[in-house]
Length: 109
Image 1 (cartoon, rainbow, N blue to C red):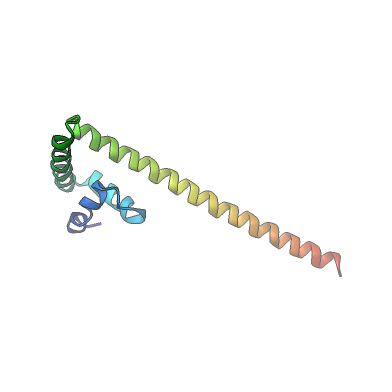
Image 2: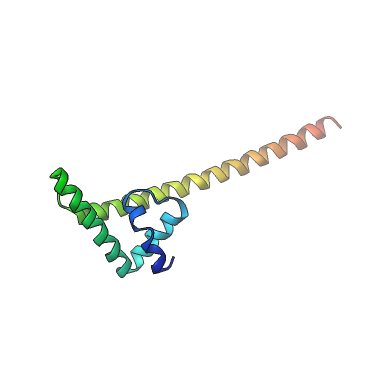
């Protein structure tokens, strides 16, 4: 993902509306690009500060952002694991079906 691409995803990430491969690419990019991380952090802090003023909540916005990124990475890892397990299950089911077809065919010959 290029730096200019990340700009359009900042608010989607902050609002938890960025999903799938774009989310993964976004997280990978901001972890390796200080200027994009700073841009996203600035937007997150501004938006969070405005909400906190209305709600009179906590002000550890930087900590919340780091936690959000960490939790998003964990969710992405779980999603990738589940996807891999689904693929393995499908392959196993396909192999079992193939063995069953071969066995039935051999039995009726």
